[in-house]
Image 1: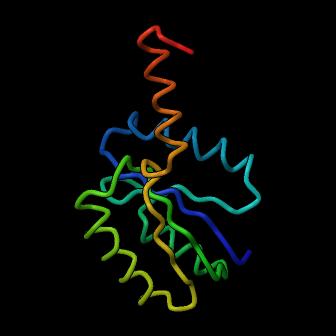
Image 2 (image 1 turned 30 degrees about the vertical axis):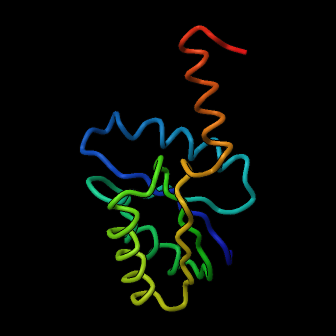
Image 3 (image 1 turned 90 degrees about the horizontal axis):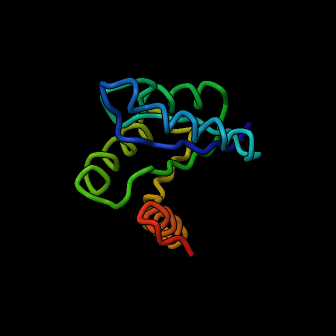
Length: 124
């Protein structure tokens, strides 16, 4: 395995909060050819650090990190890039790329608008 995708969620101490992310990761793992891992920035496991270490130990050469965030706030502008830089230094044989958050993709906005319209009883 030379490539992987890491879905990065914020994290929460409430295990119920993780359920939708775990369901998403399971559904995507069945759909994608690229090996997929779910990791959390903080507050729960698996952490981004543990996930990257696991991938590096498995011989993965490249991993893209896709933040499951609506937009890039302080965490994605400062905290996560700092984590990724430190992880790149700790695992120099694994090239890490931090992607823009899913919320910045036009298809995400359209899908969210569809869900909101349906909830409001105004489905197209």
